[in-house]
Image (cartoon, rainbow, N blue to C red; front, side, top):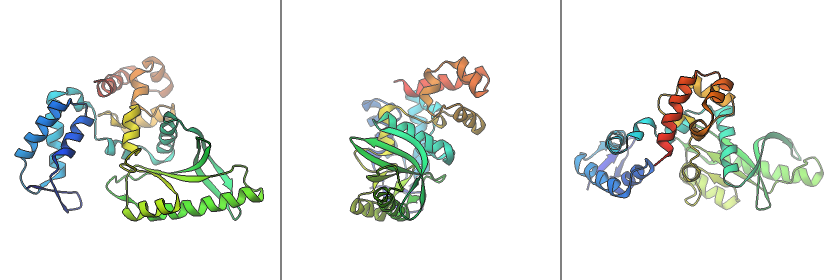
Length: 276
């Protein structure tokens, strides 16, 4: 039995299934993913760092599917998005792609105070206020405080609606974050009816799955795209890699103020990532 050393220094059993899943997420077929996962398990030493395993995965996957070289890790790609306003808008677009009617952030009046919300989302007759949390360090946890605050805001907005101060009837809250959630945060949210979409929670609809299902990868997943370019694309309303991949390059170049050759390079890499 072999162990890997995580970023925080703790040890965890080497799990070939996780390696296989990562390879499949990179677009490899089952046979290649199985073979490479077994090869890596045999090759690594006990106590190997997870970062080393990821480098091995990327190198071997690139040999099978060259497009892998054009993409970076999705968790890191999400961490590279500017928190405000870019990640908030990214989340609003993602929710729309999953059937929500979404309005941009606004200030709602509760019974006791005013609350700035990042979005108001409606689906299946339920109106939800959305709180978006972004962390540059994607290894940290989103904890209990966000759920506590959301619970208090829901109560104040509901009482504000009854009193006539709030024009919108809010049913519940949804916290969307780019990191994992602490166990305490999950328990509290479940108990209090606070919705959560985190990196890998809940199992049936987490951030990773929602992005993969609709191929809503951020532009930052394309390797070699510099922050100023990402900022210009965002200012032009372009947040997803597929918008560049399948959009009109000349128009994107003009509205974003980016040289056409650079847009074409990003588009080509984005298509390689998106297409099997």
